[in-house]
Length: 148
Image 1 (cartoon, helix red, strand yellow):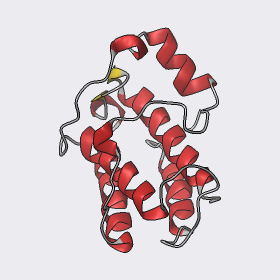
Image 2 (cartoon, rainbow, N blue to C red):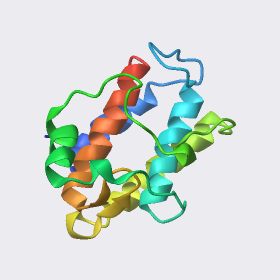
Image 3 (cartoon, rainbow, N blue to C red):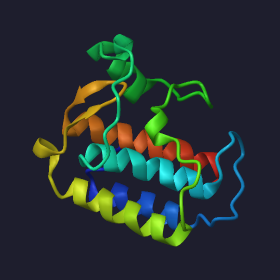
Image 4 (cartoon, helix red, strand yellow):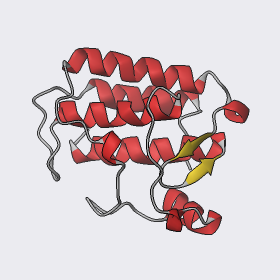
């Protein structure tokens, strides 16, 4: 499974992000393109310790369930819970958000797999390896949402 810790995977993902504009319309869901970028950035801020996010219910902390959701299960549209702190109603200026998101992703990846782990509000503690896969799946899900 692809991981955002791999530089080629990050490059491809950032190329997809570059094809997004503030006017790109979602194929599903209620977020604007700018809100989606802010949503991904909120997750990165959380991972980097720049945003405090309240832990969610613990039913997703089972390692087998985590593996299944992250590595096997196709993500349904609008069915997985999100942390309220990841929902950004007034996100700010698009280009600035994209630049900040890119910088945060690279800052996180520079930690390397051994130091890239973090506590996820839904899944709890994740290794760098699992978090890299989760980020890839999350970003890909939302970029597909906008057709990129």
